[in-house]
Amino acid sequence: MTSAPASPTRTPLRARLVSVVLPMHNERDGLDRLFGRLVPVLESLGAPFEIVCVDDGSRDDTWARLKEARARVPNLKIVTFSRNFGKEIAVTAGLAHTKGDVVIVMDSDLQHPPEAIPDLVAHWNGGDFDVVFARRVDLDRGTFLRNAFSQAFYRAFDYMSEISVDRETGDFGAYDRKVIDAFLAMPERNRFNRGLFAWAGFRTTTLPVTMEERQTGASSWGFVKLVRLAIAAITSFGTLPLKIWAVIGTIVSLSSLLYGAWVVMKTLIFGADVPGFPSLMVAILFFSGIQLVGLGIIGEYLGQVFFEVKRRPLYFVRETHGFDETPAAPAAAPQSHPTETRG
Ligand code: UDP
Ligand code: MG
Image (cartoon, rainbow, N blue to C red; front, top):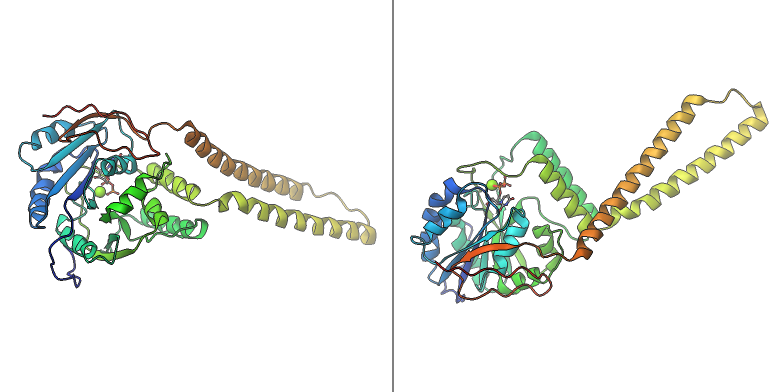
């Protein structure tokens, strides 16, 4: 539910088509409830709509259920991948398959309430904003460890990258067609969607929305996956982690020079005393540790360059239903040719 922000008065929508993108990974049990809430909301908008579901290599029968749902759910278009590619890629594929003038991106586990859509779209419709993000206002944010981690991540991200993202907004929101086109024109394989949207710019606003608990199934984001996304996000939006070693190196060498001078002075004045083995060990361990961290960070960036230069397609589509024609592939991100098997 939205916490009833002052929404612009309902003027007729200037959208010829409203698109909704839903990434899905093992969401079989939530589908009926999802469509049950989403469809009436979309029908109330007073504009034609399409629902684009991307089955991201689910291991359950999400795909079979989606095919069945096409008989009941109006304007349902479905895509399935050759395997699991991750949520960011699933959203990207979904966006590449949309045609709407305004596109809604949301999770399919009903944590993002469909009832917020009319307000998001109304704010877009006003014409002053190209992106309307839903900003979560509930205070319950999961476990202590996850919170601490997420807070640390957003601090680090803000500090180290050239853009900044708000911790309370995800990708749930309404996007103008030109924002989607800009997003799809960004070809990188290593994708942190929220960062890409922030980097693209455009006129952005947020709307407070109370997010909900996951209705069925389990979150697919293990801690390791989150840490990997965080590293990808930071390293793909800035190079501070690479450059900082020059600063650390300079500080360390300057201090070692000072220390060397101090040792020479001491020896001249007081004579040589017994060499300090422990301090030597500490220094060796400390500086070899620092060098390894530095190498690891260079490796992280090099690995990213390695993946980007291969220029592999972002994903492979195994099957689609409901699309009239092959969707326009994003210019710089070639994809496989979807096998059109209309049912
Ligand atoms: N999801 C996906 N591919 C994945 C993992 C998740 O498409 O590999 C989808 C999932 O079905 C859901 C959304 O991404 O619609 C958010 O995932 P989830 O609820 O697991 O994450 P959380 O809400 O815990 O951040
Ligand atoms: Mg969720």
